[in-house]
Length: 53
Length: 207
Image 1 (tube, rainbow over the protein chains, first blue to last red):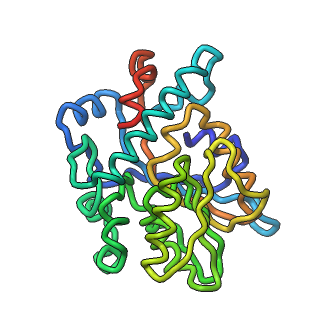
Image 2 (cartoon, rainbow over the protein chains, first blue to last red):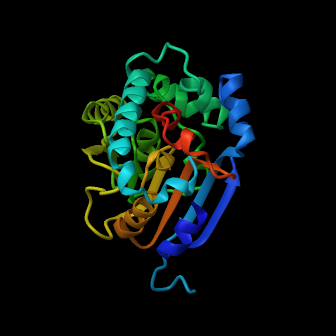
């Protein structure tokens, strides 16, 4: 998803893992971990006239 | 879901409809029966897990808190200012819209977009109970029902991963944002390519 933000023209694309996120059911959590599924926070900026490159 | 589904094939088109139906059904269930247990955390338990301020959860209508189904806290980095126009993409029962409304104040605007018109009505009612206003429009994240360059900030919580057409969604975010506008979202990503059997399973999309 990060690449999609870059390709769309967004700048300053940043992400951080959401601490503590997990699924309630252990089986779902196990599957999620196997596929590297995680919750992330993402921020991005649409360039403005004075936002620079 | 992974970015594998960023661009659906023609064969996936019917599946997309099935999955949208399943997603609608799941989130309607959370809204109508928040007392039930789901395979994801929801309600106050989830909001506290993600660091929502206790004051927000006390002040917001109980129904909005109970039906919260986010995966993080987009308010931590949204830096909303009074007077700003905010889009809450996939506004659900309205908790994030309500919190955004408190931050932008009476001179700001909160616009919700949700696939489910019943959820829109519920979110607007919750916002009114919270002493604020929000306008919720039925629509999809792939075709956001807003004009170009019309919002200052977009927040979203656990929604974009549900789309088959993520590239299109991100393009829509860019379109509706004003120059200098910003995005603060929480969502689910996967580090590995998901198998086709997982991608094709509607119940997992609604997870």
